[in-house]
Length: 467
Ligand code: GAP
Image 1 (cartoon, rainbow, N blue to C red):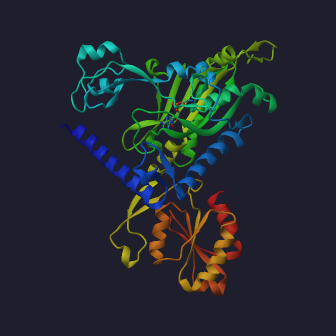
Image 2 (cartoon, rainbow, N blue to C red):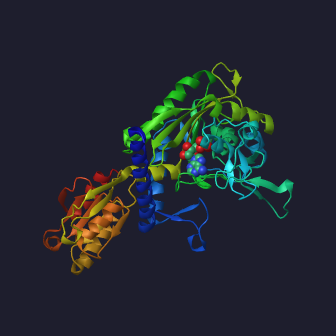
Image 3 (cartoon, helix red, strand yellow):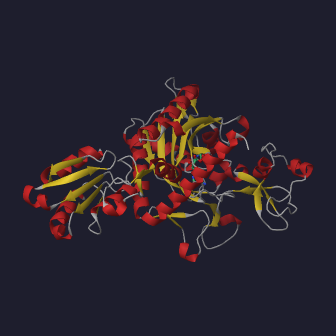
C-alpha cells in the first residue's frame, strides 16, 4: 500500500470513528434519534430530541437573521408542502427529477446506475448501452441486472376521497417552487422592486435511493432557500455575491475555514433548472460533501410557470420595458448544516475538571458557537442544601436564556455533562453566595471563572451570549 493511500485510509478510519461517536452522543444526550425506533426504525428518517430541536431552531434562527432580518431587500414566506400538481410539470421535476436505477434479478437489491459505473471505475455519466457493453453485474451477489429505468424521487399521494390519477399530488422535493408561484403576490404585497429576494425554511421530501451517513441524506428533511430576483444582465455579479455571502455565514458561525471549500459543477452534472452551480462543501468524516448550493437558475422557473399557468410574471424595468427576472438561488439543508455544526464543534480533551473520579478520562466538549448552543446557561448548586436559593437564580436566568438546572452528582461531573452538550456558561451557587449575593460563572472554552453579582447576572449573560 502506498504511503498516500495509507494516510487517506487512516483519515477515513478516524472519520468513521468520529461519525460513530457523533451518532452515539446524539442518541445518548437527546440530539437526534432514529425515527420509529421501537418499531425497528424507518430508514433515513430521524427525529430531533430535546437538545436537537433547540440546536436546529438556533441554526434556522441564525439563517433567518442573516438572510431576512439584516437584509434590506429580502422578505420571508412560508408556503404549503402540498401544491397544485401542475407546478411539478412546469418546474420539470415530473420529467427530470429522476435517478437511473437497476435492480438485481436475483437478490432484488437496487442500485443507482451511475454509482455502479463509478464503482467499476467507469465514467458515471450513464448510457444504457454501458451496462450491456461492460457486462455489469450486481455488486452484492453477482446476479444479473435489469435494464436501466428512470425512478422519480418525488413522493406521491392522493388528495380527497378518491384515489385516481386526477387526485395525485406530490410532497414538494424543494421549497423553491413555493417561492416562484408566490412571486407576484409577495412582490406586490411588500412593494419590492428588482433586485430582491424571497426566503423560506421548510420541509422537503425525496425518495432517495441511496440515503445514508446519518442525517446527511434523508428522505424527509428541511431546506433553507432564498431566491434572488434580478435583471438578466446582473447574473454574474449576484452569483458571485451570494457565493461569498453564504460562505461567510458559515465562517461567522465559527466553522473551521480549512474544512470549507467551493466546488463548481461541470456542465454534465447540472440539475435540469440550472445554468451554473457552485457548491459550498464541508470536509465531512466520510468525504468532502455539499452543504449548500448557489445556483444560477436564469429565468427557467418563472418562464415555465408563466407558460403553464397563463399568468404574466414579467416586471417593468426603469425604462418601462417588461422582462422576466432571472434568479440566483441559495439552497442549504437545515439537517445537513446541523450535523456539520455538531461535527465541527466536537472536541476531545484529556480530563480537565480536576476531580478525582474523572482522572485519566477523555472529556468531550462541543465548542458550538454560543448562538447555536442548545442550552446557554446551566445553574448548578454546589450542594443540595442550596437547592432553594439556586432555583431562584435559575428562575431568573431562564427568563432570557434557554437554561438547565442540575443538582445531581459531583460538581465536576455536572460540568462535564454541560461541556458535552456545548453549554457555554455554568453558573455555580455556593455557600458564599448566600452571604455575598454572588455566583461563579465558568466559561466553557477558556475555563475562566468570574464572580458575578446575582443582580447583574442577566445583563452579564446577555452580553456574553450575544443573544
Ligand atoms: N432548490 C434547489 C435544491 O433543492 P439541491 O442541491 O437538490 O438543490 C439543496 O438541495 C440542499 O438541500 C443541499 O445542499 C442539501 O444541504 C439539502 N439536501 C438535499 N437533499 C437532501 C437530503 N436527501 N437530505 C438532507 N439534505 C438534503
